[in-house]
Image 1 (cartoon, rainbow, N blue to C red):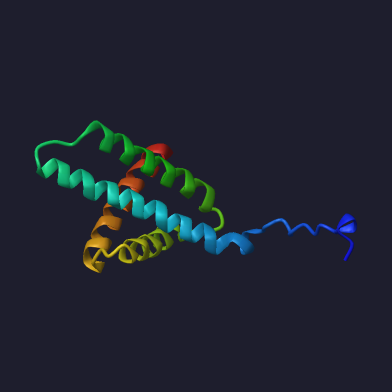
Image 2 (spheres, rainbow, N blue to C red):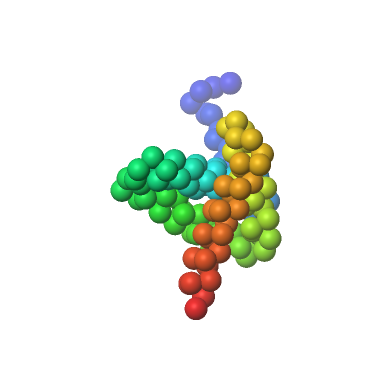
Length: 121
C-alpha cells in the first residue's frame, strides 16, 4: 500500500444506542462519586467538623448528577432506577458492601429528588 494514498475512514456519528452503555457507566460513576462524598462528609462530621472543601466537592458532584438527569430523563424515564442500579454497582466495584452501597445511593437519590422537586416549583 502506498502511504501517500492512504484513505481515512471516519467512524459513524454515535447515536443514543451506540453510547448508551458508556452513558450508563458514567451515571454510575457520578452517583458513586456523590455517595463517596456523602460518606466522607459523614465521617468528617462525626470527627468534629465538615470541611469547606468536602461541602464544595459534594455540591459539584450533586450538580453534575442533576445535569446528567436533565440530559438523560427524556430517553431514560426510569432514571432513578437506573441511577440506583449503576451507582450501587460502582460502589460495590470499589469494595463497598452492598448494604452500605444501597444506603449511600438512596441518600444521593433523596437529595437529588429534593433538588428536582425544588426546581419544578
